[in-house]
Length: 265
Image 1 (cartoon, rainbow, N blue to C red):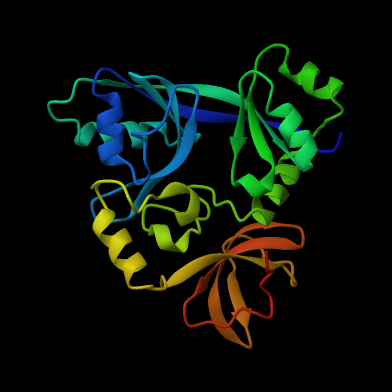
Image 2: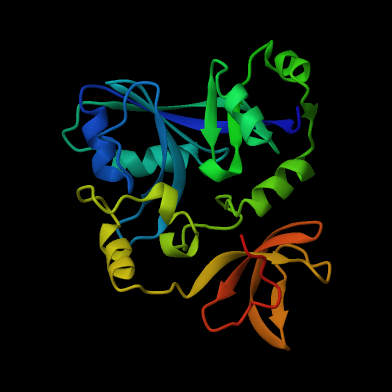
């Protein structure tokens, strides 16, 4: 068995009540209405301006209970944003935290096998063969018995960067727009009803617009650190946002030609 596991903490925002499904569907960029108990789906939570509040993974636990998983430290931000739009809605919003083992570096066969475990959830994109496993007293032993090694933060970051999976507060923030993140394919529906921020998303998508900058996987040829400028042919081409060894994520300007350092999928 290949792969590794790494313990992470996520913030959880629960939305519970008769109107929970309808309310979240009206607030999120992806389809929540069709989720069945036991299913989950990524979605962006936006401000009315179209700027990003958070990337969420929405779990449907029952028809009246949904749990929104987000990066540690952003749970209160999510809860506050949802509460601002909760007007005459029969649901309650509360926060908590949950530990996961992020399991990465798997083959397709290993991924399919581990996904059968109780409390295992597919993560990132389907092609990444990544999963998260809710941590309890026996989870680490179970993973070791299945031949996985305990990984480091650097191992996790390397996998995240190579998957071009942005982290909130690192590769995107409250000034980011969805089109620059590369998450449109997994976190936005173009066939659902209205939601805050939809106008910007739909306008850019329908016009085939290119965001002023976009997140890309690049080679870190010169030992750059996160926050350093990306310089190509003596020109400022953008900024490095996440770096791990020879790989990096960078927000590249629309006007820049980054083909010399960009890594194709």
